[in-house]
Length: 295
Image (cartoon, rainbow, N blue to C red; front, side, top):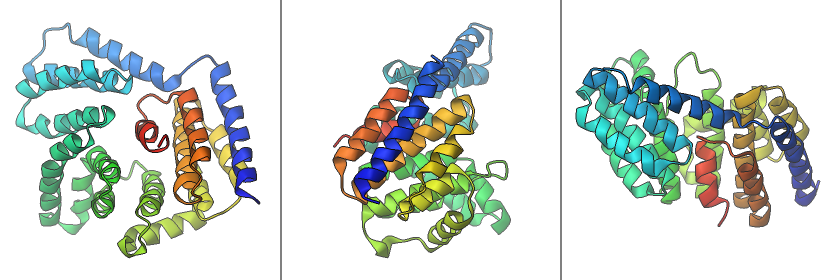
């Protein structure tokens, strides 16, 4: 099937899903972040220890950042860092880096993350083999953010290295599949087969063949499969914010595929327009997509 026909079909399906979301007159992700912000603001009025107050400030900051109010979020993170315990510093630093990433300060985000993640790598390397993944998973959000930051800086080697160290726990069964989709995206951006990571490549191939999730469908699409009906069906099965998040991921990676594999930036822009329409607040792919799909 011609690419233009395929993408027209995708966008038709995208419009159906977007219509379903808009008909509900709800933005589920936005509502979730607004509830978290309101809760944090209520809790922040109570008498709290410095440690608890710092946690609440970070909760507020993360919610504000997800709601595209990062200018308001940054002072709260700075305040939290001033009273944080040593144990809180690392996760709070990741939150600050996330805000920098939202603001487009990608180099600043990576400057914060790099020493923290290098330290975690060293600790994981010294741990027992069966404990390594668990150590790295503690800063999963930091590693994935560093991978996307490196992509925006054109540092493909480090993007793949950060992704390879983005580990997950046993209660996140689909994270390996998500990581495989990100791997295909980074490899397409790098356009250099010599940078392939053997473990990530092996996992991606296995997931492409066996996954029944929307990530598996995206991976098969990335290999040229005409399976967009399957992708739409899998997303439609999900509920509320889970559907909105999966739809946002799919729109971004479809757009990335059309731009960096099929070399058609106009179709990628169409995906971005659909992303903007559903406004998936808090989505890393939406923040990143607004910068890379619009070019």
